[in-house]
Length: 235
Image 1 (tube, rainbow, N blue to C red):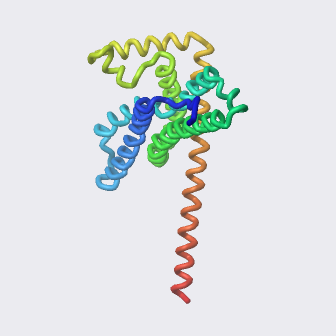
Image 2: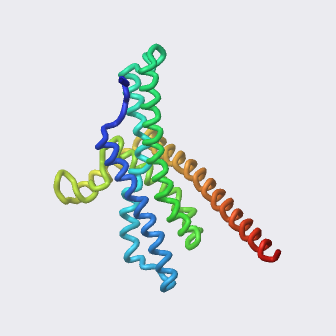
Image 3: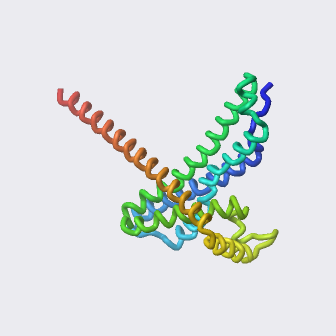
């Protein structure tokens, strides 16, 4: 029997993954809807998609928030002294590997959902508002990092904007803006938020380059197969 296995509660994991999946689904819906609008009428129904994009932005920090789950791993690692026992017990070593693998997959799912929640919309915006996108991306990563900070340190949730203390109220908006204002009074907190935003940006750039390379390779393969079929037809 494995001992010292450090996993998060199942209901907590399922709930966090569900929240992370919401912006992915919304991004796919908006991207497909806008393309359909352009194909059908050559104009976009912004009155329909703008509110969806707002909800998408509010839920987006739930994706990269999963990267902060490693704090539980490090805390449990220290408390259980599993790294110490892993050098003396095979069972403890396996437990350590299982726990580490769980957190890699768990946080990796959050990072992947972060990429997939942005990429369809960025491709869409790149073709239609390329210059504006150059300004929007840094702001978007900063807001996402700020959202993670609010959830991690101040324990705010996305729905706290409209539903606070068990009832619908605007108090959540006031509290969130108050915390945001006070957080920037500290140079350490500001640097922390900006630093995490830069990390997210760099990670996304890597994903974007990989996706572009993958698309190029698939396009090249299709062209080669098409050329091969044409050659067989001529022969």
